Image 1 (tube, one colour):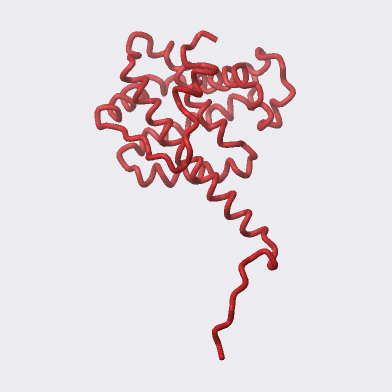
Image 2 (spheres, rainbow, N blue to C red; image 1 turned 60 degrees about the horizontal axis):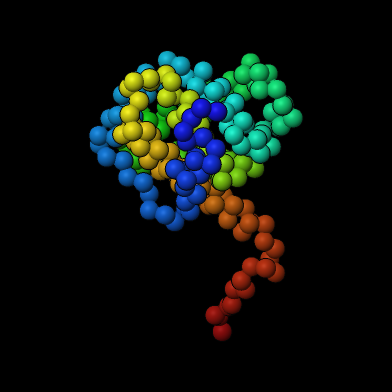
Amino acid sequence: MGCAISGLAAKSDFGERGTDDAPAHLSDAQIQMIKDSWKLIRDDIAKVGIIMFVRLFETHPECKDVFFLFRDVEDLERLRTSRELRAHGLRVMSFIEKSVARLDHLERLEALAIELGKSHYHYNAPPRYFNYVGAEFICAVQPILKDRWTSELEEAWKTMFRYVTGLMKQGYQEESDRRRQAAASPKDRPEKRSTAL
């Protein structure tokens, strides 16, 4: 697997944070580091997307259950050449690109991440999987950035992913609560008392 934060390390480094944890705070220097490194990563986004998901399925095979098209694929080489996986990887990389672009406009980033969390409720993608993507992204980009990769840059990316996944979990929970409330039958809803005489 080759990455220091893959597998079990990903859980401890990214944490299994709840939605009520304080949001991670990025400094101006961290934001600039992320933006500068993204300029280099952007040229290889299709490659990074594929590497990221193949690694995700390697380190956390249970995640494949969320993906109908990949659920029964055991051959990782077949995944590496899958057009569907490439397309999904590009969608995720597009979200990361939008997140990086919105680091100076956190209200826009918050809205984007919360909506993505809501949509993942409909995909039946549990929030416990959200943290894994950031860990695998970091493992995928380290070889691309080579000597430009530093512990400070790694911490900046981890902080951004903690922030974004926290918002996604919030959106997932909001959608779950909304669906549960909508599904409640009239007898389960609190009774409204009339105050009219």
